[in-house]
Image (cartoon, rainbow, N blue to C red):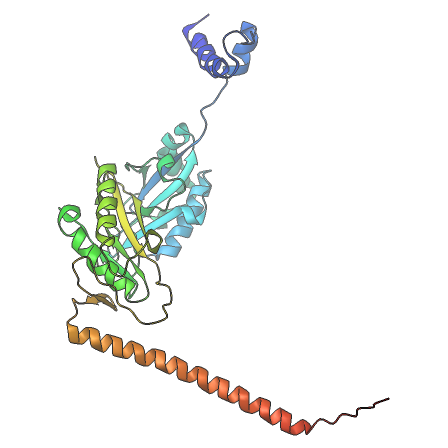
Length: 347
């Protein structure tokens, strides 16, 4: 028996040993076991494919469509939602989630060259004067780590900041210095408005960059957020906010995983009377379009309460008008039918 054959038998016998036990292990003839298991192939696995030198003159939808057609010609069909195109004025590239065999991934460069010679239209996919580049992205996350979670691609565009969305770059010593101050300000402001999310690891322009965040950093961030929000008044409960760490898929290899920290404050429940939330330091903040206002002075808080009471008063007046109109309609219906007569017969 050759060494290769012995290794095949070893790989096959281990799972049977775990499930059957040594005493009940079924014995297979040597020839049968070799024939059955020598042709085993490695199962396809998930990979992140980097496609560089894309033509930036095309729009993102066009690049995604052309790239999907190109991969189909390479016998690697992918769904549109698995293609993330990053386009900038002078540069464009894409990150594609594929599930293939390792040998298929290794043969991509020469298969691409063959396809380019047969289909001239594919050359339009590459930038002028450059050749299309295909390689496996060296990211810090494996497929198993991102299954069931959100994921973002480095360089992806998330849009602009809004009343319910705030971006922070989070570079340097952000987590140890500035994060706690932003938690106080933005959570308080979102609680006093319509809820919202603070995303750390995103440029003000909306481009995803990610921040270096290890598992220890995650634990510290959770403890920090919980300890700060426990001091808010009125008291807020854990179901009022959610803290998540979104993996960022990058084309460059880093020693510490890149992530986007998302702190989401859910829309506050309707209260019987207007109320303001204050931080653990007694400060009050309000959310504006793309910014926050605060800490508020005593006069500003009084004005906020007055305006809120005016809003509530307006709602009550509208309800009173509706009830009054309904009452008048019922009275008119009674008058139209006239008095109701009845006859009583006594035997």
